[in-house]
Length: 205
Image (cartoon, rainbow, N blue to C red; front, side):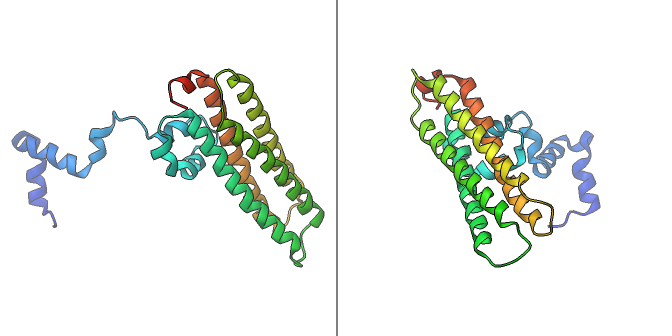
């Protein structure tokens, strides 16, 4: 329904119609009365990551399950990175098999090898994150951070192997996306490490 200028003025005259003024402001700006609310679980989790927008987009679907659990967010971050790494790995393998020119097949082979190593480290990390123990918590987190750091190095090495070119840009963009996801996963694991083994005993992991 259209609001005429006369009616709009009537509602916005605070001295005469203060009640209607605040009602209208509530309708037009519902967020005005929610400024004190804390951020969503995914925003809170991703606040420690370097690529926060990517983190929020890639992990938003886990909010209902992960909530404010640093352990669940760490596992979610690694799981998403594994899924994207597999997709990019298949993409690179397809390029290697194609007969189209303009691509360095040696660089592709090296990149595929890097992704295979990266996936091994990510899978090992996820396995340990699913079976964390109070007694071995510190050493387990150290192992996981070492493996994810190695996965991060692998994706960087892959991107560095390509020279500039029209078709190379798209490849690097896809590889870089995995690098960013891996970086975020590492930050989430570090956040879990900061929470300490107590999160296992109080059920927050």
